[in-house]
Amino acid sequence: MNRIKTLLLAVSWLCAFYYLSYPNSFTPLDERSQGTLDLYQQLTSRSR
Image (cartoon, rainbow, N blue to C red; front, top):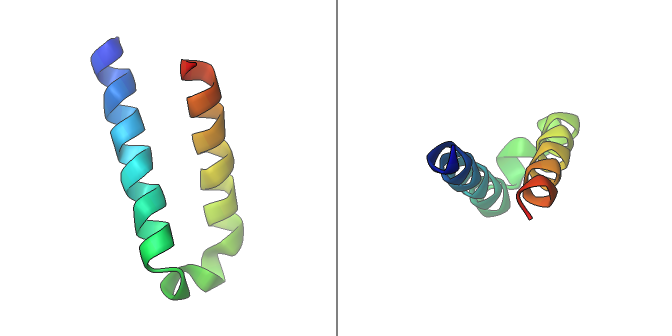
C-alpha cells in the first residue's frame, strides 16, 4: 500500500513540475489543470 502511495505522490509531483515548467502550453487546459491541482491537494492532505 505504501508503494502505491509513494508512486502516486511521485507522479503527481512530476505532473506539477511539468505544469510549472511549461505553463504556456497548458493555458487552454486551465480548468483541467485546476482539477488536477485539487486532486493533488486531496492526495497530499490524505497522506498526512
